[in-house]
Amino acid sequence: MRVIALKFENYRNLKDNIITPCDGVNIIYGDNAQGKTNLLESIWLFCGGHSFRSSKDSEVINWNSDYAKLEMRFFGQEREQTAKILFKGNKKQVEINGVEKKSAAALIEKYCAVVFSPEHLNLIKRGPSERRKFIDSAICREKLKNAVILSKYNRILNQRNSLLKDILRRPSLEETLEIWDEPLIKNGALLIKKRIDYVNLLSKRAAVYHDGISKSSEKLKIAYISSCDVTQNDSLDEIYYKLKNSIEKHKKEDIKTGFTNIGPHRDDIEIIINDKNAKSFASQGQQRSAVLSLKLAEASVLKERMGEQPIILLDDVLSELDSKRQDFLLNELLDCQVFITCCEKSNKEQLKNGKVFYLSNGEVS
Image 1 (cartoon, rainbow, N blue to C red):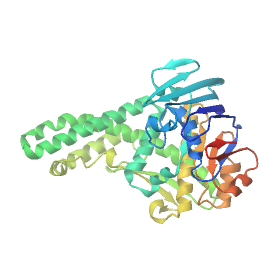
Image 2: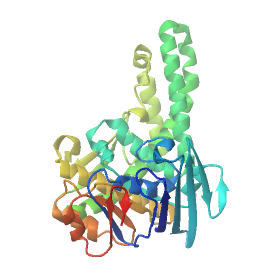
Image 3: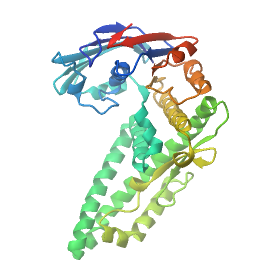
Image 4: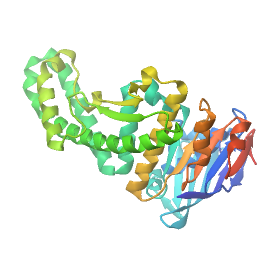
């Protein structure tokens, strides 16, 4: 998959323009606050209409206009295609190959990309919820069925927690708890199995990318940490019974706290560099390399599952990386289209083959 041309109109601070990237590495170069991330965001929005910066739709519209428009020609699914997104107020209209769609979600079936931004460093820096969110987002993008499982589990979990709080005031309600336990355990076991399978696949590929980025000086490993003693080799049935036993064992504690203390909502993903926890022992550069390896591995898995090589979007990825790690990103990511934003002049000079876009005050040249 590759972007052939991108047109933007009244989009954030970018001056109206059309860019034609190359099929390999494209550097978006310029000082801070000139619009580099805005340009990267405009490419990402064709993944489904949602920004990786969690902004409102209305915020992408230039202050001097009442609408913004993005148009893209891209090659995917073995043919050239077109897509348009029109932002007006808090609403957006989407058109694919000349046909208007009811929802921006229709873009997901036609176009795919993987993005790294500095916020993704929270995968290491923050708590387990950030890492669970990353894995859940990845498995839901692969299959709609996984999104249904996750939604069901969260809904049942909320209902069970509400009942646990009521039991503290009305102990007679305890006998109704088993109504929620079985569907919670069933969907919870499915969710854990999907996560573990994905983490196992991700770990192998991330290790390969990290070996390349670090020039074989570091070893990266990703491990799923279960709250109910599930191992990476357990079958779905084994996961089900382990989760069931843990839920039953902690029932009194759940009633006392008014909260479900065991389950996939309490699990974690450990990121390990050279046999040490990255959150506690890795440097800033090592943490950035590890998260970047995860994102590149995500793209590799996505390619296998969807049959398309995703477009790679890397925002401010080169800072805090030494020259050898930078060289890997600029010159050794083959067979995929890459967009990299950077500020340092030396970064663009390291690029052996590719295209450089200079961005100043929203003007792309």
